[in-house]
Length: 102
Ligand code: FES
Picture 1 (tube, helix red, strand yellow):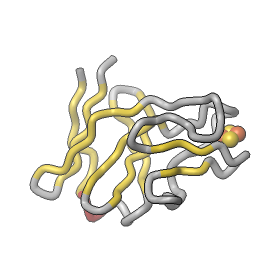
Picture 2 (tube, protein in one colour):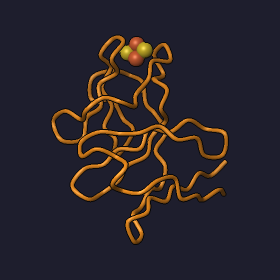
Picture 3 (cartoon, helix red, strand yellow):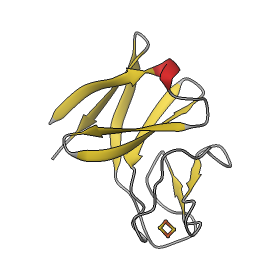
Picture 4 (cartoon, helix red, strand yellow):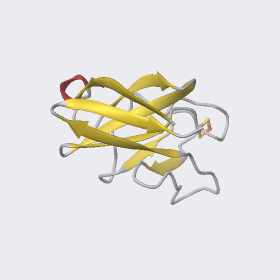
């Protein structure tokens, strides 16, 4: 298990995300209403980037390449068969900590 402070909460735009690498995995870390959510940053369709876009419908990230949608709370897609992995993410004293289990 790898657990790292990856940024401050302020570094992530509200309803947006940043990309960080933890344990060799590229993660998209989203901020919504004081909470943070970490998912794989690579779309399972054709490896498009899931970071850098705004959340839609509260918790949905839309891949900019072909429009697959993923819920950042579960990693499941409400519209396609694909799924991304989710990782534990939390805010402690304004710092964002993400835990990755190999
Ligand atoms: S690469 Fe993400 S929808 Fe195609």
